[in-house]
Length: 302
Image (tube, rainbow, N blue to C red):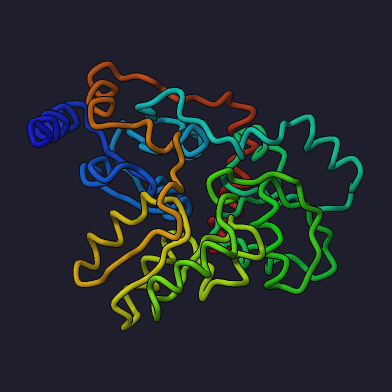
């Protein structure tokens, strides 16, 4: 049945002149049907290179928004219209404008995991893969507001020995991880390096062997000799890691670290969205223009 679905998706995809992008946290069969799979930065970069007229974005709403901002002349489809992001919803445009008013000389760095409205109020976007590099491009004396993820913000500030003004947002999935989980995993799988995402709380990051984006985890594993790894992020990445490294073993730091929104897209929904050309993601032109400046500022640095 799955193969029939995949064949049908490819048929309709060809008819529509579409490209399928998938985030590393998507279901395994959705990753397999995609033309390109990656983390937020890899997908943002890929979105600037697309020639096809239709983009099917298998991720969450803010990711499809970013693709639409970068491709105003293309049709961007999100197979699950209700696939949102709790972290992105933890700050509003009004709240950010109020914070900016309190710190009029600050520059705003916003995690790409944010709405178009927040990007439009920001000076530069960052991802978990490039936050440190982007922040380093600002003078050491520059006051920086970092939204919405306090964990990625604190990690970035620590790497540069700086202090940021942090918004108290967080990823509910990564907030589940604790030091105890790492202690237990190390006892169960001695010798396996622990890799965690910078969205994890500081005690978890401090207890890990490496703090990396999902794309960074893939590159790290490819270059290491160890036969097994403990992975502290959303479990969807395990599919890509196992596919690219069939001779290695990967253990989730927490088996129920699952983002329910990332799992809303199925092969059936990919097919339906291509057939019906729904749901189309659009961003109002004034917001898109301002948000695109923050996104391109990031892409120009990395």
